[in-house]
Image (cartoon, rainbow, N blue to C red; front, side, top):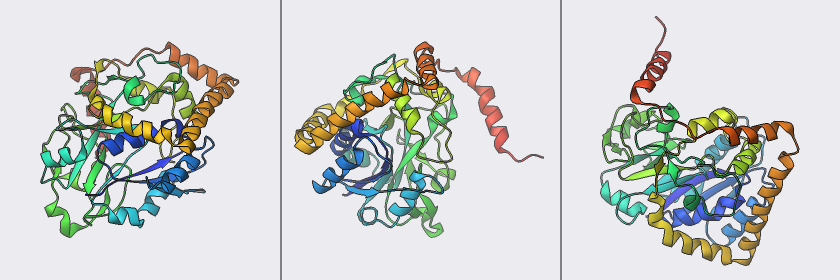
Length: 347
């Protein structure tokens, strides 16, 4: 079985090797990585990894009318790596697939859901937990505080990325789900959520978020380390978003994701395998040097940004803002009602 992750990257060299090690340990066999405008050496690391047979690296220079991510996905539609894959997932470098059944691998997940043609992997937000300084430590071992298993707001917390069988039922890739469904194949689709419940209706054709008020993580979740250390978040804000239509990273993005009330060590299941693979990658002379250089670049970039008042103000707000309080179901109910009404056509 060939399982492929398609991703886009800019200035993620400090995190690249852990992300790859985690997903290889999880059972993904192939990676198709598009890079753009890297100034921290990520592109050089990807070239070395491609030479080692670890992945396919495709430079993705602009301009991009719809942003670098959509340009990459359109190019990926016809790429040989996509055509050869049995299963495909479009994911980002702050997202870690975390299987919670069996041995924590993709084969264990598919074995638990043998009829599945698609599995939406719902985000589980991991908060900052007061970590200020960026350090060269694994993300999965640093950030262990997360949102509760049932979160009633914000609605984006229920968004997912879709692991799907690459059998031609969908003809285009999308950020959150496969697109351009073949009408003649939709009756054969079998979608299951992260807790193994069957899904139908709009999930098969267009939906990009899971049901609210349910535990969608019994079998698998998508650990979303969207914030990281405060210093690293400032650098992330400076980098900007991959999707042109998405808003900028700012305090609103931070508050919507900084949930720290629940300890979650689900990524520990792959810890031994992940650490062994990561050590092998860092042992390569070229990759080891590039990784160290990318870590230094991130520290220097933060120091440079601190010369400007706007970035110092953002850093100060991060320091002053406490972890986000989850809303109760009763508190979130009016927000959800307003959101539903906003989607309905006016009379």
